[in-house]
Every structure is written in C-alpha cells, then in structure tokens.
Image (cartoon, rainbow, N blue to C red; front, side, top):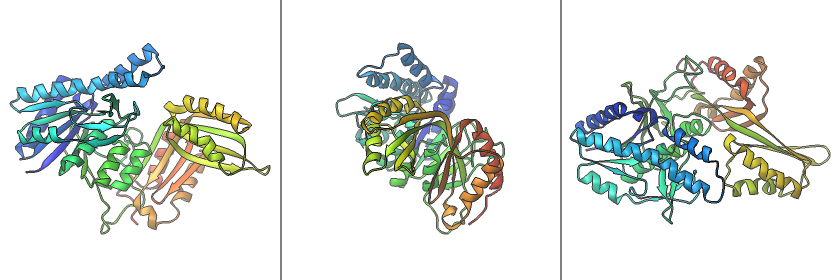
Length: 411
C-alpha cells in the first residue's frame, strides 16, 4: 500500500461543489489502494479577503504581524473542516488538523515563518486508523504557541514537508493548471506542458517567478528526495513529474522561462569603496528579514561605488526607509529606487554543456529594443532585470527564439 500526500490549492476548493469533486478524487486514490493525507489552501480568494480586512484596519504597531497570522490562518481552517465533513458524508473517515495539531513547529518570523520540526505522531495515528487526515496548509506554531504562516505558496511547503516526514511515496500538488509549462501560458499561447523537470530546474523556476510551486516546497522535495507531481484538479492527465536529474536523459538547453513583476530595485550611490561597505548596507536589510535577490556593485573613477540590489516589491518601502538611515552612516550621496521593474530568467540544466545562451538572449532583447538593467547568471540560469512594461514582449520573443514551443533544443 502506497502513501500519497495530496495538496489542493485555492481554486480547487473555491466552493462546496469544488470541495465535493476534490473529495471524490481523494476517494478514487484510496480505491486504488493508497493511504492518503491531504493539505488544503483557503477557499478561492479567501486569503485576499482576509488580507484586505487587515489593510482596512491599517495597524502596523508591535505584534501586528502576529495578529495578521492569526487572521490569515483561519482561511485554511475553514477549508479543512468543510472537506473533512464532505469526506465523512461520503462514507470516508476523516479528521481535520490545524498546523499546531499536525505538529508543525516553526520559527517566530510572522508572515514568513520557516519550519523547524514536525512531530507527525498524530498524523500517523490518524492514517493507521484508516482516516484521511486533512491538514490546514500555510501554517504552524512557534515554540511559544503563536500561530505562524509561511507566506505565498506556503501550503505547497506544508504538503512536501509532511510528505517527507511521513515517508510518502509521492506528493501530488493539485492546482488549476495541468502541470509545469515552459512559461506562463497566459502570456505565451504556445507554451508547452513539460512531462518532467529536474528538482534543480524547478527550484530555479519557482524562485524566479513561476507560481506553480513555492520554492521552499521544491527545496524540501529535493533535500528529502520526495517525488513531486503537479496535476490539474479539473482535467485528468499525468501532469509534470519533478524528480532528480537522470544522467542518461538528453536534456534541453532551456527548459523554461520564468518571470516575476513583484520586484523592486534600490541603489545606494556614491559610497566609499572600502572593505565592509556591502555589509553595512545589506546587514540592516537582512536583520529586518528582507530577502535580497540580485546584487550589482559598480566602482567609479573617484573610488566611490554605486551599490544596487533587488527585493520583493512588498518590501520596497521598508527597505528604502532602512537605507535612508544607513546612507547617513556611510556618507552615501543618495538612495534611489524603482518599484516598476521585472525579472526574467531562462533555466535549463543543458546550459552546463552549451555556450552562448546568454549572448543569444541579449541579442533577442536588443532586437526588441529592451534595455537590460541588471544581469545575474548561474550554471543553469540567466536572469535579467528589465522595465516591467516589456516583460511580456520579452518572454514571447525568447520563447520563440529558443523554440520552446517544440521539444526544445537538445544538449
């Protein structure tokens, strides 16, 4: 008998009718001889509605993020209870679990917590009794009993983490798309569904803007070797399998293109070019738990430097406020920012053995008169920052230039 963890996103559980269809998928998996544990998101736009309530209150004092976590976590708790009741109505034993009841212990960074440990005794007991444990995704508790949430896509992280600790044979992420595409099919109508992608590629795609999976979920899956499959709740099909790289498989040079519009750029100008200046700039930003992405440092002839980096757009104003204080301490000339940028990335393990991808990418963008503001590369990816207004044009041009609508160039 196999153990499967199934996660259903917000569009999959948007109404009671949707939840009944989800319940029948769970029953079908049990009928095939599987034990099934389930992780659920909030119903439809429930999280956005709850978030708008918090914004309406407009409270940013001490402990505000703690209360936001209490508020946002309620969305998943509604879903877990409704799905459990529907399963029981259909004759399937089920039991709902909050993050705390599922034994998920996190750090204390509210709204962006990370999992420290999972005590899965209660879930194992539920499975052994023949029940379907239905766990509220996106949440846990810290060591003081405070509810914490994981940020965008956190239910994916819950599902993969539970699959790892339960020793599941597969973690299935059900969503409103049929799997992982070469790029966003809403932007490029010739985007192709991929049958398989490596953990390494999916981690890059997820962290670079592909919203199919949360990057931390892929990290867990890769670390603990959890087979991960993305499927549609609404259309039957094999989906996309995310797994370890197979050395015997011929890999495409480029597997996919990811982009994100949730980016902001900050620049500290005229800083003295001495050891430690980068730490003086980024240290306070890091202490505020703001994640920095791309970094560029340019040294001028007068021995000063301009230091530029990107953050999530939601952190833009907080980061600007921090840099305003830092600038005085390091005698910077000025601090500037731009929260209307986007990051576009091409990813493929085949890039390891194929030169010229970056130069071809730059040529394609140049022909479209798209200016590149920042560049970052790794062994299997090339990322650029461009003006937000050009992101869809750039994505379509690159998808066509690298023939991703076909099976892809092979290395």
